[in-house]
Image 1 (cartoon, rainbow, N blue to C red):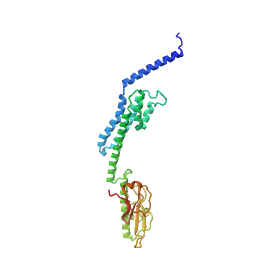
Image 2 (image 1 turned 135 degrees about the vertical axis):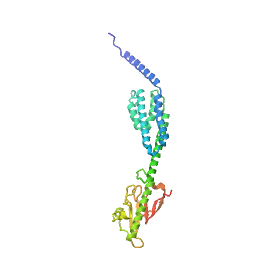
Image 3 (image 1 turned 30 degrees about the vertical axis):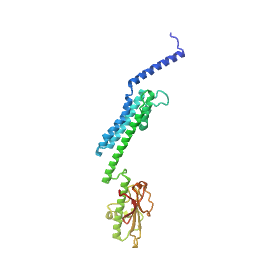
Image 4 (image 1 turned 120 degrees about the vertical axis):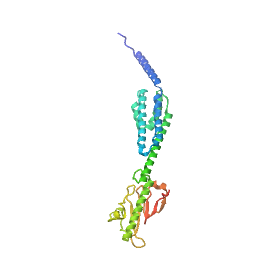
Length: 296
C-alpha cells in the first residue's frame, strides 16, 4: 500500500502538472502563430476593397445597396466568429474573472464591431500573440469609411432619380420638398385666380379643406385636391378684401419643414441653408412674397 502524500507533495505535483500543461499550451500557440490574427485583420480590408472597386462600380439596377449591406454584415459576422475561435484556442475566459470569454468576444464583436474588433486585436497580446491594435484601428476606419461613403453615394443617386421621376420619398432632400410645396402653391393660386374671374370674389373661408369642398372646385380648377404639403401638414389660406371692395385678395402658405406657421406678415427670401430651420413659404395673388432662394 502506497504511503499517503503530504500536502507539500500534492502541491508540488499540482505545480509540475500545471507547468507541463502551460508548456504544452505555449508550444501549441507557437505552432499556431499569428496566422489567424492576421486573417482577422485582413478580412475587413479585403471587404472594403470589394466594396470600393466592385460595389462602387455597380449600376443601380444591380441593387448595390443590398450587396453593400451583405458584405458589411458578412464581414462583421466572420470576424466575430474567427475572433471567438482564436479566443477559445488562446484560453480566454479560463484566467481571471475579468477576462472575457469567447462567447462574450463573439457577441461584443457582433454588436459593437467598431469598438470590440480593434480591442480584441489588442487583448490577444495578453496571451502571447502579437498586438495588432494599430492595424485593427486603421482597418476598422477604412472599412467603416468606405461603407459610409458608398452608402451615401447610392442614396444620393436613388434620390436624384426619384426627384427626376417625381416619385415621393421620405428620403428626398429638403430642397426638393420645398420646390414641390411651391409648385402646389402655384397651382392653388391659379385655381383661386380662375375662381375669382368666374365668380368676382372668393368665399371667406379660413381653411384649404373648405375650398376643396366647393362644388367642382377640384375637378374644374385643379386636377385633384391639394390639401397637404410634402411634410403632411395642411396648406394655409387667407382671403382678404382688396381695394376694389371685393374679397378677391388671397394668401396661400406652407408651414415648411417644422410644421409651424409663423404668420402672414413675413416678407422676403431666405438663403438655401435656412431650409433646415423649417421656414415658411407664402404667396400673395400668385407671387411669392416669402420663401427660399432656390435660384442655385
